[in-house]
Length: 251
Image (cartoon, rainbow, N blue to C red; front, side, top):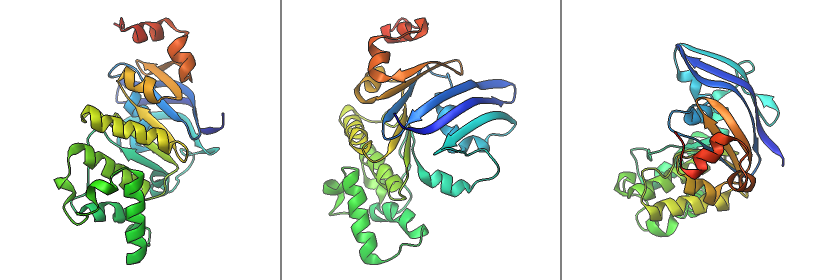
């Protein structure tokens, strides 16, 4: 298993609240890592620490390291925009830009200096196909993104994220607002995309984790309780808290 991200002794307090407690874990490259656990256990905060969105918190106390490709992203002052370009973020609810379907995908290409009309046309089509959205929108590319269904908007946001050529896809409960059919479309796309990207998914849905995970990180009260190969975790969990969570008897 090749390592993409290595987290060492990560500790985060916001005010007096201790959110992340001595986090040590590894994210494998070109796999789907699922971060799971009960609500309020620190899953989303851990995800945000990977692209330094936790910098936006006030009154925070931070220690530890997050190594991306062997380099600590908290060492000195890296190019935050470049860091976040490497890690496309898919949120719980889709957030399309207030512009056309075409321009949502072209936006990242344009700000990186790629403005040729022919190039943009070809690349927008490419990323919409990657997100399994092209056939549904090819005849209305210049319609507002807001005219799409919620499920389509989430796939559009995925296409927009892919258009900046990330190395990693961060997904924070990306299907929680979607119907089962749209959820399956996102899950299937993640399974396909892991051949090219490292994917990290926060989910509270145990069935979803079982369907898509290659690697599991199970958290409780800001700590990592257990981590490892998904098949091993789901068939032979080691920790009593993991066993209770998987049985549905977790208190």
